[in-house]
Image (tube, rainbow, N blue to C red):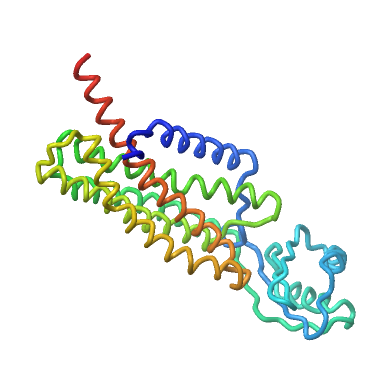
Amino acid sequence: MFIVKYKKIFLSLSVILIVVSLIFIFTFGLKPGIDFKGGALLEVNYSSVRPEVSLLQDKIKTLNIDQALIQPTGTSGYLIKTRDLNESEHETLLTSLSLDGKYPVSEKGFTSIGPSVGSELLRKAIISIIMVILAIILFITYAFRKVSRPVASWKYGIITIVTLLHDIIIPTGIFALVAHYTGAEIDTLFVLALLTILGLSVHDKIVVFDRIRENLREGDKKGFAETVGASTSQTIVRSINITLTIIFVLVPLYLFGPETTKNFAFILTIGLFFGIYSSLFFASPLLVWIEEWQTKSKKS
């Protein structure tokens, strides 16, 4: 199959994408939202005309509230993110948003998270991702324990983790680039999107690897590379159809959904796209490359 035949191209492309994404991440950084650093989130709605963002920014500056982020939501509302506010500051901010009564405003929601709570959420988010990755590698190793020819079962687990890192590094890098220009922040939904990508992507990889395992156990007389190529061909349509079905749901959520879920839908869509790519065009070529490297090492 062409995927195995041109494995060097696909492997090189994946490496380039990972490197570029890491450059974006370390160059632009990821700005933590109030979920992780603490702060306040105020959602308001204007009953008539919504004022310009610049007018609100000028008004908020007079309240000694630094680094307030104002994002439009819907046709007549705003999401306003600030530092942690006490009740008095909260009421003052809400009153000032009417711009001296010129723009009647109502509060739709208010959330305040202290810095200590935010740090705890960040720690738990990192632990959750690490635990998911460890659970996946243990499961893959166990599931493929009877497959030892010609690649050991634990190497399937390592390949899966490498490709899963590919699946979350690339969308994170793209998000870092977009956030640099839009001011978007990472929150618990961002972490949830990464965990969802891990779960859905590992499913695709297990499907491909399981078909390879079945063909190997049936004593396929083809070479290992040919078996991997044939197995990938047998699963490619199924994998693409399942992923596209999910993406077709996420795109309307991003375009027409609430402002709070846009980043979630964006990250998940990008992650699923590169997840299906890695399952077919990165994991399989990497498996063949490892087998060829093992063969050359034994001969030398």
